[in-house]
Length: 223
Image (cartoon, rainbow, N blue to C red; front, side, top):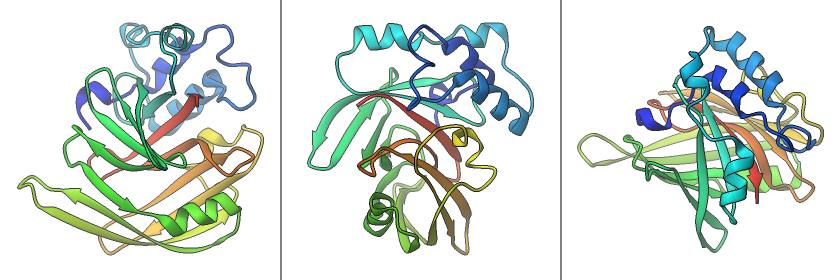
């Protein structure tokens, strides 16, 4: 992912503002920062901790949907602002004009991140998450390589109730239903973790986006 979108685990501490850590459907960012720092090692500088606006300020200035993201290998958190709905898909944009498209809270496409995820076939995964049922699903992720050629990554996935370490550690303290998606292919394997609301929609997650980006934590601040 472009450097502008990368996030420092220690920067989460700077995000605490009144009203942004008390809702039980939102992540306790203080505990989360400690958890992720212990997993990846190290901490960001004081400058990095002040490099992003606080959630309350963003929510006051933006009337639409807002997501905050946190990658495991970067230097700053980032916000995603909802700009367009197309049927079940919602597209968000960052301050540096990268975009991510979500369906039911699951990332289906990215633009401007290099090694972009062009689209995803995840109908079975979404159905299992929505229903809360365990089962198997095939996930197909279509990527754009360095020569602008589309490459298909076909994964066999197992969806199960609960969370598995380490991807689920960031969501473990949240109340409510959680599920894990363990995916494997000859080229790569990963685990995604999801926290759902009462309708089965994903409102917090750790999702693997690409070989380049790896896992990213997403937390919905406003739907």
